[in-house]
Image (tube, rainbow, N blue to C red; front, side, top):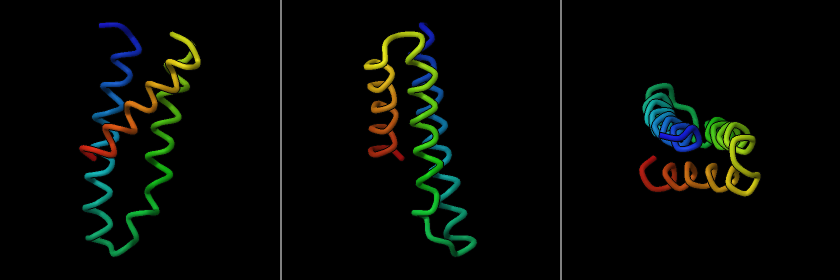
Length: 75
């Protein structure tokens, strides 16, 4: 498996776990779930930052978009 694909898969799992734990925590502790949005954006940015040097800037942006799509559908 190539490195960019591995980064995308790991980040996809990470963002789904982050959303799940964040959702449970927001209900448990009574804070607005939307406050965790910065964490998801940080994960997207990290994916682009890590994949762009391995491929191209455009493919790094697309990799971050794929993780965002996973977050929007599964997360």
